Length: 252
Image 1 (cartoon, one colour):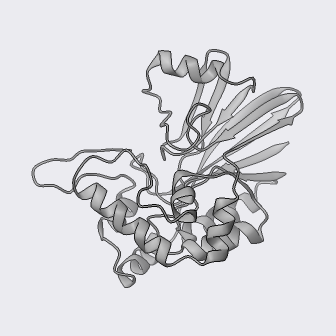
Image 2 (cartoon, helix red, strand yellow; image 1 turned 90 degrees about the vertical axis):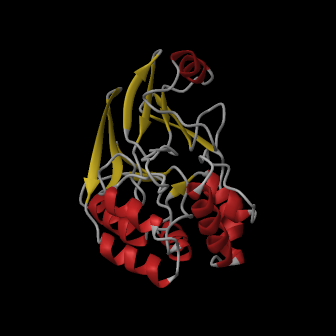
C-alpha cells in the first residue's frame, strides 16, 4: 500500500493542485489530509470544495475548528505583536469568505482517525494524541513530553501536522511522521510539502516530497483580497517571522 499524507493547506489552491497532480503520478492507493484546510490563504472555499470533490479523508485542524465555529481565535501560539494581528485579520477574513455549507463541513471533521494497513496501525491527529488541535510536536519537543505522547496511544505510527515542518522520528517504539505544509511551509523551503508512506509486509518507508507551485499567483490573490502582505512574505520565503523593527523572531 502506498499512502499519501498532506496537511496545512491553508487555503492555498495553487499549492494544493500542484500536490494533488504530483500524487496522481505516484501510484498512491489513498490520500489522507491532516487538517487546516483554511486560514491564511486566499482560497478557503475552493480548497474545501477540491478536498470534497476528491473525497480525501480529512481530520480537523485548529483553523478548521475556528472557521467552522466562527471563533475569535485559532488558538495558535503567536507571540504578542504583528503575528497576532495578521492571524486575527486572516481568521476574520476567512470566516467572512466561507459559505455556511463549508463551515458545516469543517465542523463535522473528526479530531482523530485510526486505521490499519497490513497489521501496521496508524493514528492521524492535527496536533498530538494528547492535544488534538493545538500541540506542536517538533524535533525539539521535550523528551519527557514526547514519551507521554508516544505512550498515550496503542497505534504504531502517529501522523500529525500543525508545525508546518516535515519530520520523520522514531520515539519510544513509535514512528512519528509530519508531512510538512502544502500551503504554508515554515522550514525555509517555499515548495509545497507532502509525504508518501509505503507499507509492505509490515515494513514502513516514509518519503518527504517537495513540489514547486505558482507562488506568484497565490501572492497576487493575497494582494487582490487586501490580506496582510506578511502572508505573501511567508509564502515567498517558506518561513514566517515577526516584522517588528530590529529583530527576526521565527515562530511556529
